[in-house]
Image (cartoon, rainbow, N blue to C red; front, side, top):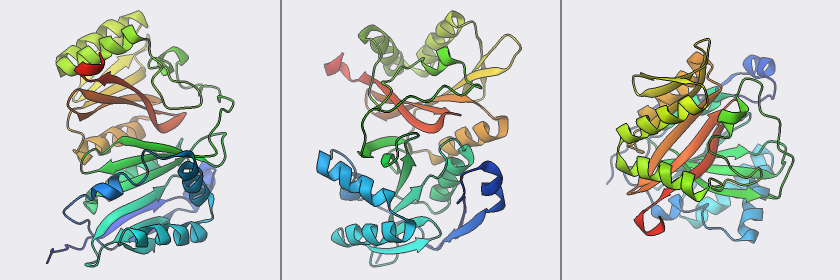
Amino acid sequence: MRQIVCASVLLVAFSCSTFAQREAAQVTTKLEHAGVKDLREDLLELINGLDRDQELQWGRIFSLPPGKRAEELASVGRKHGCSQTVEGDVVVWLNDNSGVEAAFFFIVDPTDPKEFLEIYRATEAADLPLAFLVVPEPLNAGTFHVFRSSRKSCMSHSWRVGTKGDVATPPVNKRIRKDLFELFRIHAGRPVMALSKEESRAWADALRSSRGAVVDKLERTASQFGCKQKIDEDFIVWSGDEGQPEAVFFIAEDPADRNAFIRIYERIVTHGLPLTYVFVQQRQDVWDTFRLSAQWYLRHCSRPSWGPDRR
């Protein structure tokens, strides 16, 4: 019988939209169960490779008020042999031994990095095998980006669900340099690669080569944008003329190291960073680029490395 070690996890959950309201309405949520040892592949792929009907169905569920949303998720969980408990705004799926198989976290304000930091702290403290982060798409009600934080990868994009469609692109936050915001360009309405083949191949070659190769390529690129580069522990920092950080880069060579992602968000919160790029190695020769910005603090940006057979 699997031994389940109980753990108490504090997760700060915010229920109001404005910063002042959210600070006043701060709620403490306690997760009572620890994660199971194994990661179930069927749950990992639960929101992946969807057809259009499935996209709409998940979007409908995530658009419901919390109580109704939990009811619908409980029904889905039962089909996968899981019971469900709800702790605050967190929906938790349990096995027969009360171990956590998966949890759903719902982002209220994608522009608040503290929400993401507390979720990553919670997943580490409870040693969750799988957490889904459901992020509403700004200016596109009923559309959500679902991310996974799992024992395989702490940051991976699962799927875009809901009504979808193209919407007006919000203006770039005034704290962010637009040219750096578009460094790894994406189409406005969907998280797909839009780099030129030449640019994509250059980044892929660097990422496949070594950390040093990425650092060197970033330094060459920094000079093209009038920035100075320095190394600060595991972070690569681009500074402007007055020494202010314009962009920060992190190379996540071990995607399963949750503490690395906690450090990323801690730095963002502590230093008020407007723009951070994270390169995440998902498997051999496959890397994803994520943009964590004042625009939206978890966004899949591109997949520049597709492996030797796709070069």
